[in-house]
Amino acid sequence: MEKRKLDDMMPREIVAALDQYIIGQEEAKKMIAVAIRNRVRRKALPEDIKSEVTPKNIIMIGPTGVGKTEIARRIARLASAPFIKVEATKYTEVGYVGRDVESMVRDLMASSLNLVKEELYKTREGEVDHKVEEKLLDLLLPEADKKGKNEISEDVQKTREKFKDMLRRGVFDDKEVEIEQKPQLRISGVGVFPSQEMQADELNNMMSNIGSMFGQNRNQRKKVTIKRAREIIREEELEKLTNNDNVVEEAKKRTEEMGIIFIDEIDKICSKGSHNTQDVSREGVQRDILPIVEGTKVSTKWGVIDTTNILFIAAGAFSMSKPSDLIPELQGRFPLRVELKDLTADDFYRILQEPSNAMVKQYKALLETENVKLEFSDDALKRISALAEEANKRTDNIGARRLHTVMERLLEDISFNADLKRGETVTITKEFVDERLGGIIEDQDLTRYIL
Ligand SMILES: Nc1ncnc2c1ncn2[C@@H]1O[C@H](COP(=O)(O)OP(=O)(O)OP(=O)(O)O)[C@@H](O)[C@H]1O
Ligand SMILES: [Mg+2]
Image (tube, rainbow, N blue to C red):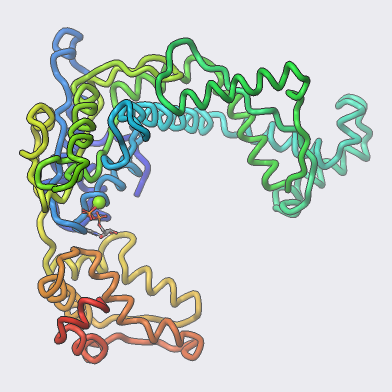
């Protein structure tokens, strides 16, 4: 998928990009694309109207394995907007042990920061890479370093050039050098940080301060390979490059204006429909989420983040519960609902071969590495799809995940014996599919265990 800015993409284009990976589910794709676009539109509004228009959050409802998480995952890849995916079940009510819901905003900001840094790096890639290379050369040729750049003899200069070339070709990748690494010392901004990570961070700070009192805060020398050294130095240079307020400001702005938080498994924090003693705390989590979705200020080590315009996309199977089992206030904050459909044999037929990462393509590529050419006849693919649908009907409906188990079973022997088939073409026919899988599908118990 081409990396384009999500902001520049029209809803139609966002859907088209998703189409490369997700078959069907048109409605869900459209709704998300519109929600994303609406925020760009909102940005163009005059201030007074702008503050009135808030994002319309979405709940995606659908059975397991039909593409809910997959849609989110693909949006994330597409997005140059800050995006994170979290599991609702990971959070606990404030005051209990565990992650509090505000941490999702901090995570979003962290991801935004990475994004902005990476972009900044791209624009100054050449400059950073040049610096990194020079430093690596200094490590490889320490003599030149000591004398100072002006006094380098012609010989050394020549060696340096030669080394540079070798460095670029990766000749030194595994060579070990000693580098100085700065101790991890983060200076946090002002403010109160109630969350656990923040406390950990603070603690870290204190520890290194104490360390410095006892003179332990010197740079540490350690031995690493050139490959690793390149990463470390690049990281340091990047840090230097981006260590200014503009980057944080930009990241903050993007988090607030373009951030997307995908909350998976939202149905699992419904209190009704579940019959255990955690009900109270689940409702607590919902109550904690409420202000964040509504718009609140969350303090982070980068400053205060306003969540008013962050887009929330929640998803859940809702098999044991309904969206109406969420606390009413939260229901109201997710006005857009879209249902994802059960996948049929026709969908499976397309899912097997069409997506850019389609299963058929994957298996072909895997066997190709062993010099075995794998082919599927069209009626074989149709048969596989029909069998997958059948298995979903007879036992549990696990959606497209069924295709994985079916394909594994189907290709088991071929995968195992690939070495005996080098140079051959193996064609999977309808008869082969029937032979391998027909008996299993007939027997419900077998299906339950094997597929
Ligand atoms: N519509 C689809 N098109 C292409 N692939 C799909 C589709 N639906 C599901 N898949 C594939 O099936 C797998 C499972 O899908 P996904 O993770 O999106 O399930 P889900 O809807 O989030 O289910 P759950 O409720 O269990 O989390 C993914 O690896 C994905 O590649
Ligand atoms: Mg999922």
